[in-house]
Each structure stands twice: as C-alpha cells, then as structure tokens.
Image (cartoon, rainbow over all chains, first blue to last red; front, side):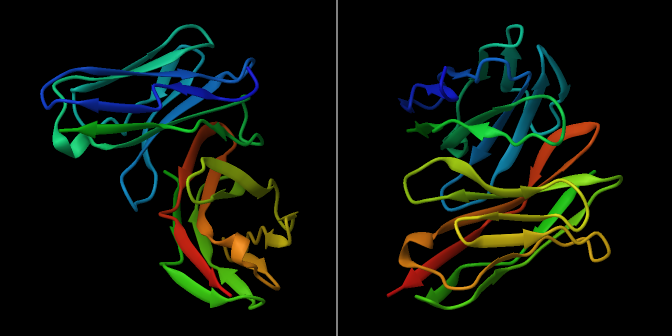
Length: 114
Length: 112
C-alpha cells in the first residue's frame, strides 16, 4: 500500500475484554515496530519485528500483551483482559532493514478502555 | 542500549523567533540520528535525518548537525512560523540494532 495502515482507527472496549489491533506495513518493509503513546506523553516502545521474528519485545508491559507477524506482512497486537491503563494510541511503523532507513508511521489506533 | 535525552517542554516562542531544541544521545558504534514531527491531529513523520558524523540534515527550514564529539543532534530553525507548532521527537538508531529509540518529545507552540 501507499503507507502504513492501521485498523481500527478507534476502539472502545470494556475493561476485561480482549482487543486485537492490526497493522499493514508498507510493502517490502521487513522491519516493523509497535509503540504506545499515552495522552500528552512520549513514545513507549513495545516490540520490534524483523521479518516474522521478534528480536526485541522488551517493551511489552505485561503478559497480557502479545504480538505476531505473518511473514513480512501484517502484524497484530493483542491485549488480553484490558485495563483502563491500557488506554492510549497504539502506533505501528515499518521500514526497510538497516539503520540508515527511517521508519514510516501509521495513523494509530486510539484505544479507550471503559 | 541506546538512549536519547531531549529538551524538556513545552516550549513557547513568538513567530519569527530562533528555535533550538536540544537532543543528546547515548549509543555505541555509529548511529543514525533522526528528528520526527507530530503535527496536531496527525501521525508522526520524518522531519530530517543524518547518518554519519558531521552530516547536516535539513528540511522545511529546520536543520540539525550530527556531532559525534558531543553526541548531540540539536534541532534549529532561524525563523519559526505558527505552522511549526507540533511535538518534535529526536531518535537514534544504531547500525546492527535497528530499533529506533525515541526521546520523550518536545511540544512547541508558536504564537503570532
């Protein structure tokens, strides 16, 4: 696609429910990142994929959070038993491999847990 | 691991003022350095980048020079406009370690 696509753009869920967030990276981008941004805050790294493996998942805040990626394509971030503190914008980014290349961000999924 | 220390915000300036947002980094090897910008209601986008020491990245009147000796990548603009109001993020990425590490962001507001 033309850019990184994330869905849904907005999600309101009840506390305790599971949610699944989707990211479609730019075609050909082997690196994929998930970040979280709480209201008025900076970026919090969650997980990084290179292809379909995750060499760095140190940012996942708890075992309620998991992510997977199919090949060098779609990634899903799953949050189980959502809590109110999970409310944030979840951002996905992708890039070509190599530190010389910048990451391109999606518009994010705004998650609200009520 | 890599880390980025960014100037605390928020920063408020008058139109046409000179802007500096400080950024220093910690990284082994030879990192690439980036500035990203997030305009109100929009996603993050790359503003500029530099991939080796003494490189100067520039875009939209903004500049930043990769200073290895001071491990800095300060963002500057000679004359800011209201449309520059946004949140600015400094980021570092080391060759062989492709995870982008971001600073906490600096919110800039330009008043007419």
